[in-house]
Image 1 (cartoon, rainbow, N blue to C red):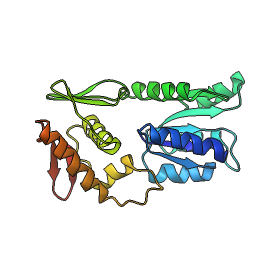
Image 2: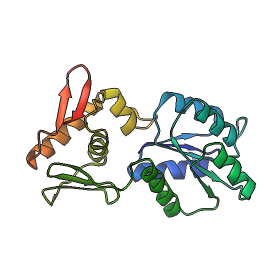
Image 3: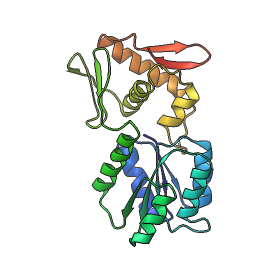
Image 4: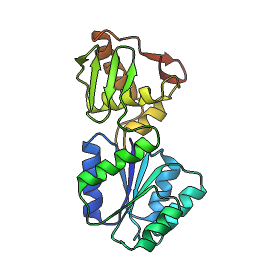
Length: 220
């Protein structure tokens, strides 16, 4: 999943994006409400981790605006405000969950996975023929045998499995696999597709990923 962290504390924001990216979730950091809305207009995010106390445009206004714009990203509010009224207001404006500071990173992870399960994603094992991908354990097996993939190969395979039958353009894939600070171009997707296909072929399932010339890639 791709995540937008909206947090005006440089230290906490950097720690969260670093940890989430290390765990296989490309993450961008917005230090304020205006930056957050700009990111949300430009990139697709599965989840927004949203602080409420932000400069200029606060978190509640960000939440209200993104819902008014029809942006369906799941929103986990992360705030030092722990009053019932704050929780109720955020949830009524469209937040999906509310976690108060201080918090444990493990609980944050668990809540993020719970949000994805609500959206039909999460920890359900994904299958295509003899191939099985376990999003929670970060494991891929073919006919019961483990298949070693890099984080990007794993993310690409998971994306294609979740969007099975849908043709995804190179740019659409790039935006889901890489954060906004990446120096790579969308052409790197061709390399990841190629290495993933080679590994799948060696495992006996090399015909899974199809190419629609001029359009993109699809899991057959």
